[in-house]
Length: 282
Image 1 (cartoon, rainbow, N blue to C red):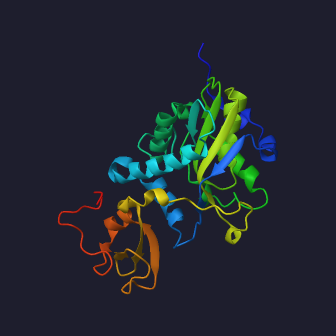
Image 2: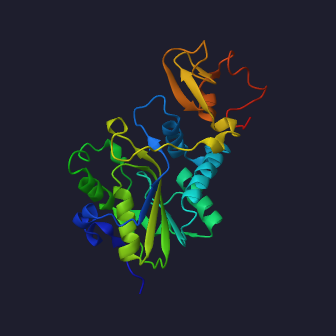
Image 3: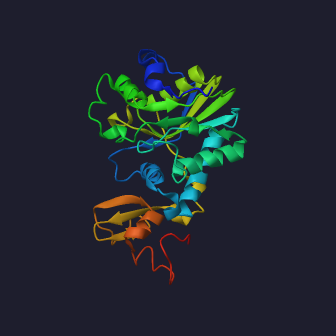
């Protein structure tokens, strides 16, 4: 007889999860400054998360996913894992293949010879992102977020013999990683779980105990569409912040996104080739 899905709200002990992290190793690639207008790495991860459906942002979103996949694989190059699981986005009921996170998981699986086991997890309904829920702050933030993650999350019965690489985009308290890791180990038999977050939300001007986290963007040097540009209130995008014609109020942006909504500055960017479209790699 087929076993029914396991509701994690009743299968996992929140107090135990709050007291002890079931992840055997945790890696964070960079920082996410929620209110920064000048952090390129923050803007890069934001763009990665929001370019959905991916078909509307090709070929750039695949290039960005390959960039992150390369960094992930480098960080876990001495780890052996048989399975890859990614944390579901807030709006997902089940893993959606047209999301950047799915591209990333598939690329990591293909490179490592692992199997994607994300479809073992599903929700009963979509919900607002964790960051918009006021009650998930304060001294009891971790416990509140753990309850928030498990409330509608289910696991299909399975046996994940071996190690799991868990992928998540932005870490806050780490509640999602704890829930997924505990489910994989306690309910599916995984022996080890390593979590990699693409970024971590930073607080207290960086004095939040995480140390220096800086994303290595050197691999983007030969990808102009993924380069850092600056957009201003006059509706132009600039190659650098030092452009003499830039407005004082300028925001950091990824070039392929800027090209969709802003005109190129004639002084520092020049004219785009005739027929050039924002989604075409220069």
